[in-house]
Length: 170
Image (cartoon, rainbow, N blue to C red; front, side, top):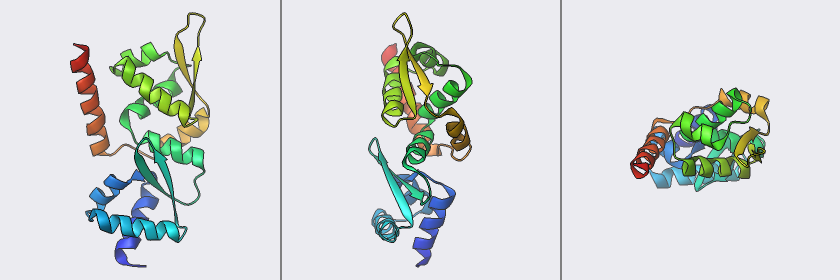
């Protein structure tokens, strides 16, 4: 195994769920070089991938598909905040999430839809028709929360989205 391929594999093992751009940026390797080594590692069966909302995330083998989806989502700051809130409160409403996180309701709705599609959460409604979020596997989600943190570029993108949301709301 080449030194570059070894460093790619080691980076993925220490950062499960890293997406392509972050990997190439963190290792300071060219896009084509990253593609080549990732393809070779996947063909060798030493990596798994999960495609989620336009990003390919890379994992060392051993994570089941639900864990892969959850980890990939936990790398996104706004989704992570929603999950943390849902772990702390029993079935928070979409309106409460929007107020607590200072994010537009449409942004909350989009992220909650992503969580529901990934089977990380389910949407339920109260007697007044208000939507609430409930995590499908809270204890496992809590365990995975400790494994990953969003990267600086991911946090900046999320914060830019929040800034745009605030500007559109005004």
